[in-house]
Length: 234
Image (cartoon, rainbow, N blue to C red; front, side, top):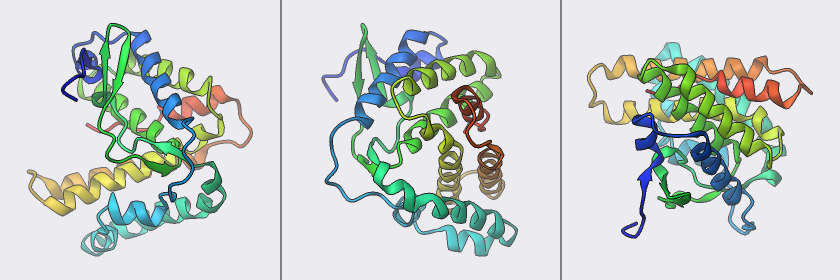
């Protein structure tokens, strides 16, 4: 990392200096990663995600917040129902793909933080981008500029990748929000952490609602619109 030049894409986004070409490059980096011919690793299953990323805390979380037990179970059940047929489509993924993980240097992009590389649904990485970019728009009260940049990212990515990945982005976004709820439940060190846990689960349910509203055999443009409808993390 000491040799990485340029600026992080996150800083460019924060400073409103990110351009469409930067988001296209951001998408092209992810395409290269997802197409990398690496098939020997054991796939990351839903149970592994719940144990590692959610710290095995979904059960205790549901016990501590009884009103959240049913929504949490619904998300997990939905993800489990489609997991079996997806395993053969898993690719190499970053696991924490967001604008802070890429540096832009005179047209050259550097990908950082490869500690979480594993085989899993590529929609997880895409969902991470959706959640982060929508979150930046919400945080800065400027949703439309970030939404347009997100559209550039999605259109570039899906120009090269299977459009069926887009169908699973909202569901993976729901899993990301569950992970964030478990993190807050684990540390309990933020002011208002009780409300933050409920907030994250509520956002997860919004993502699940987007997933469940999807129409079968629709155009890719509709699927991408559904992706951008997922809420952002702030």
